[in-house]
Image 1 (cartoon, rainbow, N blue to C red):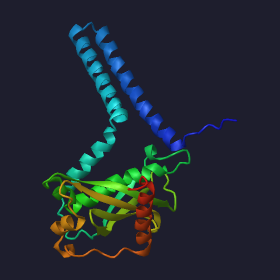
Image 2 (spheres, helix red, strand yellow; image 1 turned 120 degrees about the vertical axis):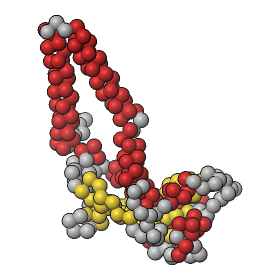
Image 3 (cartoon, helix red, strand yellow; image 1 turned 180 degrees about the vertical axis):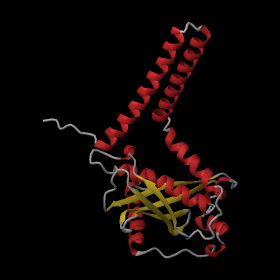
Image 4 (cartoon, rainbow, N blue to C red; image 1 turned 60 degrees about the vertical axis):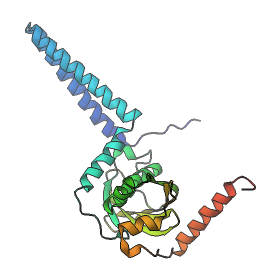
Length: 255
């Protein structure tokens, strides 16, 4: 027997509102065309046709960008970068970055709570916020030779669901670094009682032709951490060990 996956009412409601708005806009445009035609105004009719055609073309472009290019993601990144560009850079790279987000109807699954994959998507924005506010992105983006930071590993634990429309916070902090690697922790926190809804360890790696080290980059951002790194907590040390063992196990024999 096939069991159909039924969408939650929040998603159905949001889709219904969007569809109603599109329908009302279309009816209004058609009504304008009818009035122009009844009045016998050829110029007015042509202007309405151009306006309606342009509106439909714009709507099609927006729809294509949303589904083919993931435009909302890049617009969110752009808006976040612009908003944070006016802020003063944080004094220490060890400061915790805390940002509030909302669980939208596009984030939920059939259970009416945030889908597990959406947690990781939100962390893209949280890491961007962390490195933008402490000057990391600015420094790396202008460094020569060209340098980038990429995620090479992450492990997340889910502890309590996040319901649709709920506002929550993500706290990001730098825990440790060695060689070209940074180790970050993300915590999804409830605004009601501070409960940790989920937590994630992330390994970030510097990629550059001159093999830059994490200590070198962090020392340029914060002189207080130029020559040392905090010791990893037992759970982080175990996770780093797991990552190293997994990497060895996946290498071809003899390498």
